[in-house]
Amino acid sequence: MQYSEIQDLITSMAQKARIASRTLGVLSTEAKNAVLLAIAKNIGEKKEFIQRENQRDLDSGKERGLSSAMLDRLALSDTVIQSMIAGLHAVAELPDPVGEISRMNRRPNGLLVGRMRVPLGVIAMIYESRPNVTVDAAALCLKTGNAVLLRGGSEAIHSNRALAQVLQDSLQSEGIAPDAIQVVPVTDRQAVTILLAQEDTIDLVIPRGGEGLIRFVSENSKIPVLKHYKGVCHIYVDRDGDLDKAIPIILNAKTQRPGVCNALEGILVHRDIAEKFIPVIAKQLRQAGVKMLGCPLSVSHSGDIQPAAESDWGREFLELTLCVKTVSGFDEAKAYIEQYGSRHTESIITENYSTAQRFINEIDASAVMINASTRFNDGGELGLGAEIGISTTKLHAYGPMGLEELTTRKFVVYGQGQVRR
Image (cartoon, rainbow, N blue to C red; front, side, top):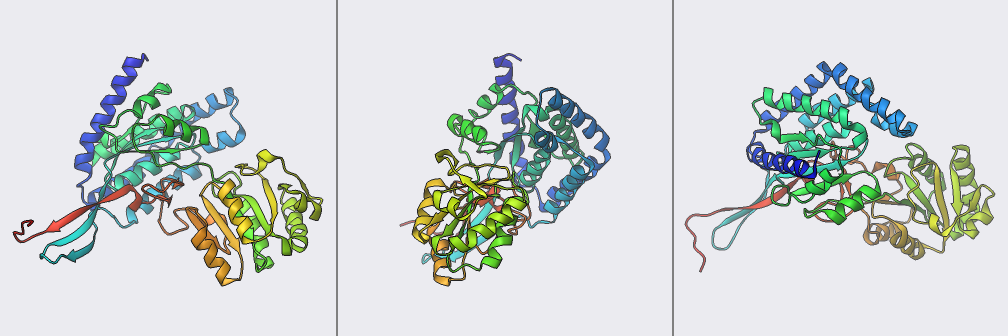
């Protein structure tokens, strides 16, 4: 397509989404849940069609030399389809935050002032690879009354188009404008740039993918962006830590799913316990297939640890590799996290209440944890039910973004004829 054609297409989609958002935003909870359940039913009924289109993407991906990991993320297997259906049912069961009123206070002049949760409006979601994100994001936006424009990666274009058809057919069957959920049908990168310029019709952009994608969106968007940068997560093993707790926590954080953003990428060990603890944890990690890169002092405590290069510190490995550093105490651990962390997830192993409280109060991350795996920084695990991503910036959300984070609050004022004097 020519640039002008793409521009006309994206502009039209954004305008239609804005119009659809006005009716979607006032739908009842019952109506929204009915659509979610209709989508779940239709995905089950159209499974063969969806998987046939997905196979086109998988075949193309193999020809393009995509890695086995990428192909696995791309595949809409029976298990993934069932997970999507279960997710839709789960979102339908979640409490609807829209319309919730809080802090209703009476002012001295008699006015009642409160705040009510309302949809953000139109959200643009830009993401890579996993086509199941198309349904997950659509479900969360629908439940919160937001229209959504979905732009997946080129490698999943046939899958996403098929899912868009099912999503829009479900909306239409329930009497809701199909434009409330739209998938950008072109793979040209120009479409993203044009999408990021629609500040008159789109209220928020959420990029989800690699660091390169996040930076591109952040640098080119005229619309507010909720950023999810890399997840460089650490565990600090304090001198007052229970080492029997530390070992399974570290193993879980690193080895359960090493390719996700809340996986462990660095261990910090207090020097008073380093000689005792590092050989033990290094042996356990080596047996689990983990490659360890460390500072000179850490290397001296275990032959399983190789010297780290300067570029290794603060790196998001997303594989079975991590860094080990021996530190003099809390202050050095804090300084290291400030320099190399990504404000995603930080955890401490300690039985010292005062040190634990310092960690909570002084460490800047979207989730701080005491004696727990970094893998718990996830919407489902933290009780949100579902998430659209994890924000590592503070406006307007910090951490996993569930239904509440896809709304904002407006003031509601009840009067009895008051005028300002």
